[in-house]
Length: 256
Length: 338
Image (cartoon, rainbow over all chains, first blue to last red; front, side, top):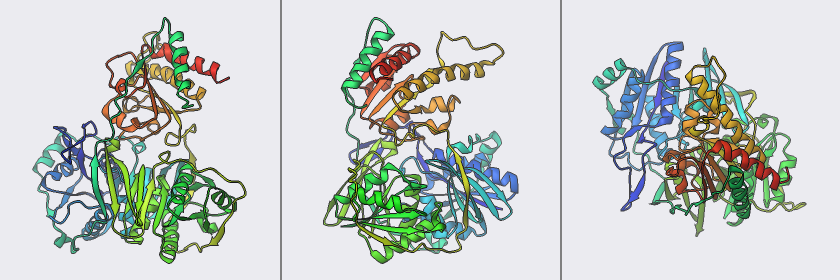
């Protein structure tokens, strides 16, 4: 079974991300694989373990984005592909989905394509469904369990009301939620293998597509208005006294 | 401006953010509410009462369960024939997914999880949080139709006017050989949903630190910690139930196994914006603050006076949450007549 997992490199979730002189910076916080994508890698590896096959990790970006691929390799992916082209900057989600769907088609014979639910930088959560739509494959997004049998699959999807149980024919696109289960840590052997891996770079010419045009523009990025409020520390002679005073203050704010 | 508003519902019960989107659309021009499902007459009536000028109704047994492919194809076909200037969705699971797919079908883009917008000469500039709200971005879309999903609780819900009606237009469900089949549903844990909640009470790592508790014998260290955390979370849940609030948790509490992930507030959990957020035993890691910083009123109870959560809190108690939280529950019960 041919399995693809799409990953992205992002600033660590603990990073203090700010805008300075119109540019987004995150100090000396590391760039890491998008935390949601680790669940996607885990899901891909579990399917390989259950059904055999290969797991190929792909990402879009510059040379440094290879680190996200190396993380997937260290977790156990078999190979990785970097999609890199000067034309691939400031893409929006539909343009990203065009590139990823072209790459999945070029790999050929892919039956399962995994994504994290969203990237923690852009927070859009659109690319998995858009890639599925372009491929004309079922979009099984926000999956918490996945069971493949033959050419069909049964998933439980997280929805506001609980879970929706869906069956579909392969090939299919999946995105994963955290309920799927903790992703594994890279093994020592995996890290060694990843450090030696030669990762091919594909340009748009190799995907036989022209540069997709972004239609969404970010016209301005700002720091959110400061929320440093003066904290009124409520004190009293006993927990009961404090609680009574605090309850009165909260009720006076008319938020209940 | 002509706007389609997708009314997201589960078995005919609309998610509240759908009506908020309808209210926004009304401020921009004429509004067609888009309703897909089976047996949707009552929901169509409600859409008129919330201000829809027209309801585009695809009422068909094939649409009884939400399936992304069938719903997206029906929606895109309606949009292609009616050419609205704008498609609005609530940022719900289904709304986000349909917006994503419709954008591919209609060769346009999506501005997602928007918290503010302004229209000028038919072109909309939106504001939306990125990096879980650590930054804000303004966005525009250069193609038509513009597609926007609106964050729940970011816009006011319009008043419902009983008896108001409008034009009901039937649209055909796109049927075809769609590759998915809905087998059924499983319940979630119940309780108030975090993203819809107007009040949230959250617990953090601190819930397991009650020195007054002695765990039952025979538990190893981790089991004893979980046992203590469960006693601590019971206090958080009691306060939540007195306030009819949802229960939240920090990532530290979820990762430690104290509560299921569905409760997690923060950058890798849910981003929430309630009227009142009460943080119990939460120190305020940056990724947690990112997920709740836009709450209207923040109250923090923590034993560490230096905890970062106090920088966002309007009211704070530096003290033992195991004493203060139950006392606060009692104080609210008395005042709210429970």
